[in-house]
Length: 403
Image 1 (cartoon, rainbow, N blue to C red):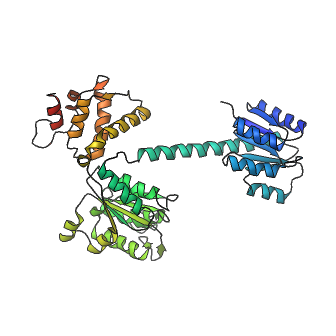
Image 2 (tube, one colour; image 1 turned 60 degrees about the vertical axis):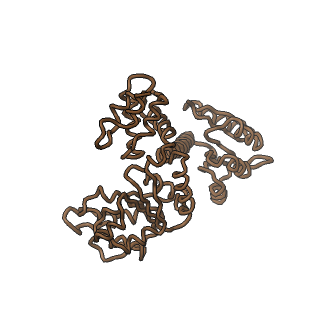
Image 3 (tube, rainbow, N blue to C red; image 1 turned 180 degrees about the vertical axis):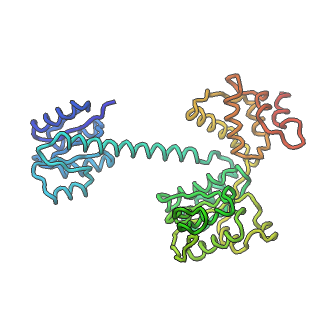
């Protein structure tokens, strides 16, 4: 699809020369001979870029630029002028111009400017699309009362800087809650840095969290910035925080108390402004009793404790979750869309879901791949649902097959 470029200039010869340059390169060109006409065409024709003369009778280019930007802030506008001065260029840039080109127009300069402007627009649009895709992937799905209670906690906690401790079983959605808190906080424009404390070997966890200097230990061939530094001004999410060693717990406590970190191999302290969200599927009070978790760190982390309910406590959300996953896999993995019969859906609602939402998501994906028909029935579930311990088949499947 051709990019559409609007040329606003009161001189017909300038418009003609710009048209010749652009059409030869495959762009679609529309013209306006005055500021007011250009404003109308900018709204009606939805151009991808505007070339705007700065000296025109009536409404000048700077006034037109301000009005264009007021109605469409992201539309790139290139100012062209035969009377260019530094002060005029600065004024145009402050008003939002992408670039400033002096007449007579050199074709190479014009084309490079257009490519740069359109590339910037394309990258911005791609970034927005990726951000939307990430938000969709990490959104919390459901309308059940237990989930509404979590949303209430998010709304109360998000605007503050208080540490939050998320408690819940594996797969229940603690990461989604953490991301929602960050997304609704005053830090949302800065980084969300996630660390899975259980997945990092003990000998590397301190380096990951706090960083290290080159040569500070065997294998430290380069300086590394720690996750706390990376999250400065943003949010750090310490997932499975109950798996940290006592030594690492002491250092995390220092960050929370003093707001500073010290890289391994360095005597220099670095100030950081980080909001901490932690999560665990362990009972930390029991871990404290066993001497496995520091009580002072627990109190620092659990300023706002939030319990994330398991899926079996919000079974009314199962149908909307299933539909969400069907939509997701159909869009991203080119899976054939399939329906779930009422009996199959009831069986899914009765399943214990020891793996919670993560297990449900994996189950839906397997069913879309493995089920042969267009509609998924209870018989299809028996091949993919994990059987509860001590049971010959999943209760939901067994009861539904009697219908």
